[in-house]
Image (cartoon, rainbow, N blue to C red; front, side):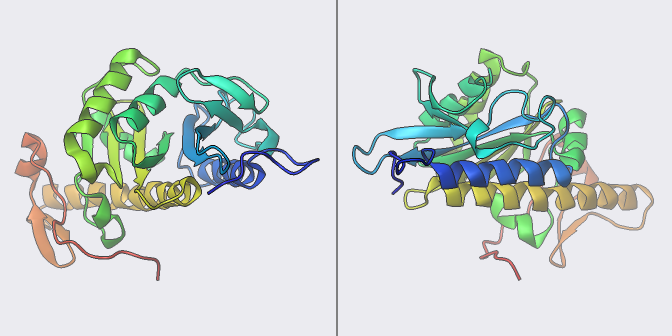
Length: 259
């Protein structure tokens, strides 16, 4: 568990806030988001009381600060009251979506929203993304949700309803938000928020590769060089499946770790 009270002279949740600041910079450098930003949060608990708090990026993290944040700018937020316990900056309006996701499945420990470059192609097309690489197999079906305006209550309600519907499959999971970006949820009963954050970073990065490869496999089918989508040597779908919304992903469960 994480100590809520910092030693004298140190900022509270210093290690967690320092790590999130580093993640934001990496996400910007890798084109896993753009200048319009996104927002990232994860949960921590006070060791003395067990009370949960949300560690979260401030609004305008990319446009105003170019993704280069100090740990002191990362916010410590009290859920639902939305009171900023620590941190320099303002709370994003998309806190409503983060809270809705955590409420829909308390085992989710990290909510990661960004505007990843290649995934945005699939999100803006309205098509579900074929999930074909080994590294992204654990994410399962990558669905594009219907459009709702960013930061809106309808978007928060749409996301939370879908998270509740898929139950344990929400950990880990990734949705595409139509014309808006990606939403990744990670965690588990025994996973801490910081580990969940790193898991989400791995997902957005590997899904970016998958998004590009899926696009190229789509073109190869149009050129007549492939007869479907292939994953690990097996045909798992076709252009017809893509067009009618049939989920395209490798259903064989495997443990996927780094090389």
